[in-house]
Image (cartoon, rainbow, N blue to C red; front, top):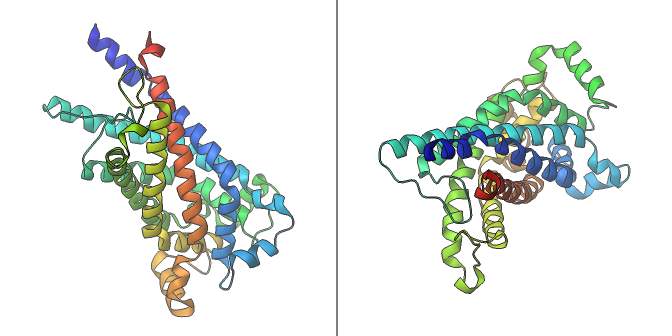
Length: 312
């Protein structure tokens, strides 16, 4: 009876990962869309800067141009990714428990703690799968944000890509996207879990508060999780930034840039090494804040949905 109840709590509530991922992703997408738009426009022009890009805007509301496809991609992508990640991590955790290996949970999280390699692989595999599924939305988002395409609606953008490029047009730059997202996700999960364990040991004990269940309080766990997310996202974003530039160029100019290697070679020979990192400041800021918002919301919602109070 106890096993049945445990399985119900663990597996029947798997939908909570969809909800947590969706809410966290949607919130961060809407709040941080201006940074994403500026990043796209900086990457599309050789001499673009943050200041020159802002001056070209037709009013402050243009900063939220492309919010719909961005919100759809981030919320749906985040929901699918975190659900897939949970499935993979749970299977790995269950396999370890069947082999008699203890799986320890952090006091700031209800997620199982895996080792470095398990975190790296589960994060990368889950992101690669979800990235392929959501690629068409990513294409629409990037082109809608750019000044190179003057789309007035998502339907118009979809029809234009379909008529001119066919089905393959919705998957342009997937190779570069996968090379960016899979390593990013793997590195992020690895760094996030390691940082989440390290931060409590660095904090003064008087600043750490506990709940009635013996775990950290909401305030303490949110502070630890959001800080860990920001640190992990910053490092992973910087390392994978060149792939983001390549991906954006291929999606905006598919006839000029046909593959990742050719795009990289063009940027290095015709422009400069620094152009590989164009838009890094915007992406770094957005990714760090986005991770802090999305993962703190996700972690707390998961704890709520899987709590004993909700199960009774």
